[in-house]
Image 1 (cartoon, one colour):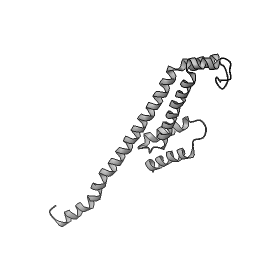
Image 2 (cartoon, rainbow, N blue to C red):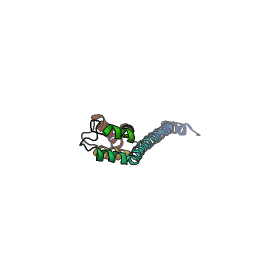
Image 3 (cartoon, rainbow, N blue to C red):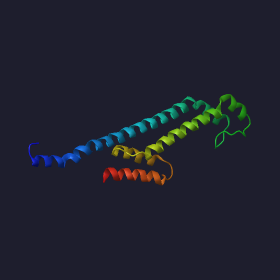
Image 4 (cartoon, one colour):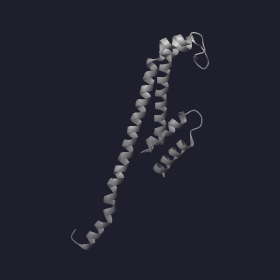
Length: 151
């Protein structure tokens, strides 16, 4: 900078030069965080589906041997012996735990700040998949993202 006028003009750009990398870093880290959370969610879904596919024959056998509209129960004759041999309750408990992890991961995704409109669309599609009313804080999270990214 050779003169005072050039120096002053350069000072006017200083805030942009200083804040631009911070803005870009925030955007990148939000996307990286979203991607990490989505990878965890996808892994939870994969684990749940694979476990249930591996043990599907046990669930089918239970419903065949012990028909009941709510599923087999310990009050049905022969259930306790069969369930012990088939490890039915342990398999059911593990399936429930994996399902809970998957559902928790889905809910965590809805609560995670969406880095872009594609992420907001994912949230909206997930909301429409849910049975019943979506919890108010999930609605608020989706609307907050949409307002931040669209307005």
